[in-house]
Amino acid sequence: MKITSFEEYHQIYKHSLDQPEEFWAGVADTFQWRKKWDKVLDWNFTEPKVRWFDGAKLNITENCLDRHLDAIGDKPAIIWEPNDPTEDHRVLTYKQLHVKVCEFANVLKNNGAQKGDRICIYMPMVPELAIALLACARIGAIHSVVFGGFSAQSIADRIQDASCNIVITADGGFRGAKDIPLKNVIDDALVQCPSVKKVIVLTRTHTPVSMIKGRDVWWEDEIKKVETQGNTACEAEEMDAEDMLFILYTSGSTGKPKGVVHTCGGYMVYAGYTFDTTFQYQPEEIFFCTADIGWITGHSYIVYGPLSQGATSLMFEGIPTWPDAGRFWDVVDKHKVNILYTAPTAIRSLMSFGEEPLKGKDLSSLTKLGSVGEPINEEAWHWFDEKIGHGNCPIADTWWQTENGGHMITPIVGVTPLKPGYASFPLPGIQPVLVDEKGEEIHGNGVSGNLCIKYPWPGILRTTYGDHERCRQTYFATYPNMYFTGDGCLRDEDGYYRITGRVDDVLNVSGHRIGTAEVENAINMHATVVESAVVGYPHDIKGQGVYAFVVSPDKHENEDLTRKDIIMTVSRIIGPIAKPDKIQFVSGLPKTRSGKIMRRILRKIAEGDTSNLGDTSTLLDPGVVEEIKGGAL
Ligand code: WT7
Image 1 (spheres, protein in one colour):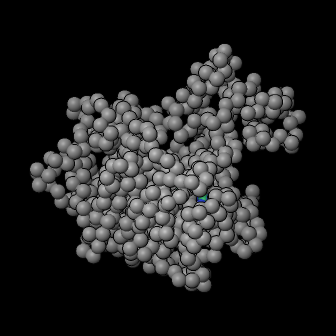
Image 2: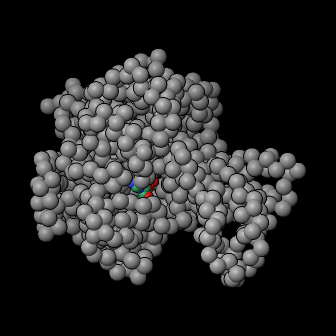
Image 3: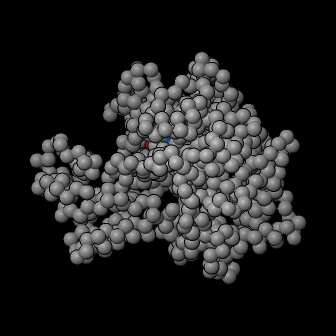
C-alpha cells in the first residue's frame, strides 16, 4: 500500500480500526484469487479460531510467479550472490523462476509428493532453496524449513513432529570459510525418522555423501527426468485460503520447539502487504534482505513478500564478514542494491571493524534501510544511518515475530518521522495494546506494559502443528481475548512504541530465538551434569549471550575440558546456534523453599550487577548466592 504522508497514514490507520474487514478486503483485492472469499474474517481468541478469506481459492505461486509473466516476465526475480566472490552470481527472471519451480514441482510429484504432505527442507542459501519452497506451495505440500545451524537431533524432532515424508537437502553448504555437510547431518537425523521415504539432494559443495538406494535421489537427475519426459509445465494446485502453507518451528519457554502454522491466503496477503507498505517498494528497486530462509524473515522478505509484489529479491549465500568485513558493502555496490534489510547483530559486528571495510565501496544506490530481529541500540542505529545510509536513507526498525507472518509495528519509510530505537507505529490494520500484570489495558502515552494485539490480522499463526491447546496456552491464555507477544514495550509521550525485549524465558541471541529451558535440557543431557540454569546477559555483538550455571560435581580435573564437552553436547542436541557463551560451575542453584530456581538472581549475576539482589534470606540455601557471585565469569 502506497502512503504519501504521515497524515494519510493516520487516516488509513483510523479507517482500518473503524472498518477492519473492509480494510483487509481492500488489501486482499490486490492479489489474484481463483475464487474470492465468502467471508473476510471469522474469529475468536478463546479457542482460538481465526479464519481469513474463508471460501476463497488461490495458489500463492500464481501470485508470486504466473501473474507477473506477461508484464515483467523478463525482470529479475532473484539475484543470487554466492558465498565465494569469485564464483559467478546468478539471475533468475520471473519467467525462468517460473519454469524452474514448475519443473521441481514435477520432481516432487514424481517422488510421491501429494497435496497436504509435509516436506522438510534443509538447504544452503542457493536459489534452489527458494525454488523448493515455491514448488511445495505449487503442489499444495506444506514446507517445513529447518535452518542449517540446527543439529541432526533437532531436525529429527521437527521431522517427527510433522511426520514429513520427503526431505530436500544438498550435499553441503558454503558459509564463509566453512563447508557444512548438510546431507551427512540429514543421514544422522533420518536414523530416527521412518516416515521419510525420499531424500532429494542438490549438488552444491561436491562433498562425498552416502546415497541410499531407493531413498536418496539427486536433484539434477530428477530434473533431467522431467525434462526428457517433456513434463516441465505444472498447473498450480487450487488451495483453500485456510489450507496450510508452511510450518516453521520456533522456541518458547518450554523445552520443545513448536511448529508455527501459516495458511495460504492470509499469509500471502500479509507478507505482500507488509513488504509493499513498510518499504514503499518501487518497480525498479533491488531489495536485499540478509536473513536466511531458515527463519521467518527469509520466508516473508526473500521469497513470498517480494515475489508476490513483483520485486527483485537479492539472495546472498555467505556471511557479512567473509572474505572480509566489507562483503555486504561489496554486494550492495556490485548489484546496486536500493533497499537493505538486515539485523542489529550484523550491524554491530560490522561496526566493530571500523570504517576501513567501507573504503572504496559505493553505497549511493541505497535509498531505504531496514532492521529486524531485536531491539536496535542507538549506537548501531546511528552508525547504520550515517555510515551506510549517509544520513539520507530512512530506517524501518521492524518489530514482528515468527507467529505474525510479517511486520507489525514499524516505521513506513519516507512516511513515519523516525526516532532511533523505536519501532514507532503499528501498520494499518494492527491493533497493539499494552497491558499490566492483571491484564488490564493501559491507556494513554508515556506508559509501559506487556505487548498484546487485540484484533486479528491475516498473518497471525493459526495453530501450533499437532497441538492446538499449546497454541492457546502460549499466546491466548495469558490475557483473555488478546494475542500475547511475550515482549515488553514502552509507548512514549508521543505515542511511539519501543520494544524492550522478552518478558518470558526466551533469549534473543543474534536475532534468533532460543528457549532457556531447551538449552537447559540439552546441558542436562551431559553425563556429569546434575542440573543447570540458563539466562541471558548483554553481549556486545549478539545482543544477548547464553550464560549457563551448571551443577556438575564429577567434572574432569581439567574444568575447561568439561566446559567444552558440555558445549559439544548442546551442539549435538540443539545445534551450534545454542552453544553457551559462558559456563559457570556451581555447587547448587538458588532456589525457593518450593524448589523454584530464582532466575532473577542469576540474571543479575550474569549481567554483573550484584549490588542489589533483593531478599535472599528465604532461599533454601542462601549461602549458594555468595558462592555464585564470587565465581561469576
Ligand atoms: C522476537 C521474535 C521477526 C523476525 C525475526 C525474529 C524480537 C524482533 C524486533 C525489533 C525489538 C524485536 C522480539 C520478538 N524482535 N524484531 N525490531 N525490535 N525486538 O523472529 O525469532 O520470531 O523472534 O524478536 O522480542 O518477540 P522471532
